[in-house]
Image (cartoon, rainbow, N blue to C red; front, side):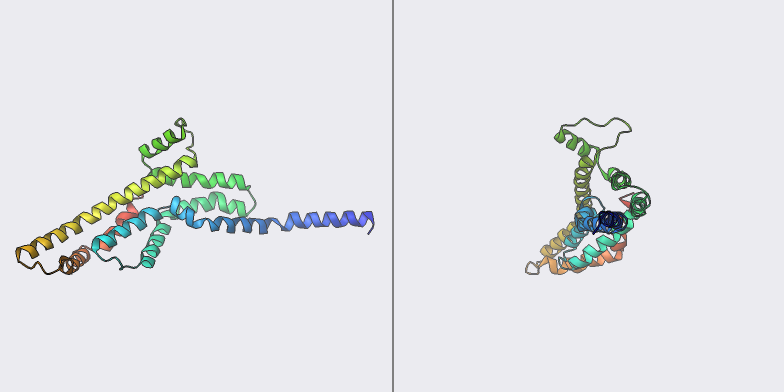
Length: 227
């Protein structure tokens, strides 16, 4: 091969790589990011609060196997998609779509995607949790107008979500506990000490829950708690 032909071949290979390799690389990066989807789903979305509250509800009703885990997780996913819809639309419109259309680079796309995600998490995060992680990190609180780093926002958001979820679970547990105590007291007063209280309390709790349209109340309360 002559030097001129070798130079032309190298130039053609460089053009082919630079021109045709960007889309596969972006798809590879996208699939790599999707491999961390489960961690992101738990750490930066509404999924954690929803699935914990639904688990508390199942335990409070006294039906540890109904609904099954697959149903609870599916319900939590659907409700999370509903809650996170506006935030996901902002991320797609301001970051993901321009990046796929090669209008912005990956670093700028990450910065723009972090803005709506940070806003959503900060709306659900308690001030004392943010202050706690600033103290742990030994960093000064940001001045007005400065963005809080994601390394502080994400753990503070997760702690706040756990606190909120357990508080809501407690509010669900107390009425069901009162039903259990009432049924146990009635059985004791009637001298029916050999009858298991759960045998009577379970249908009573299910009846009360259904009469109150409990599933609608719980789901709507969960969705509105992220307002």
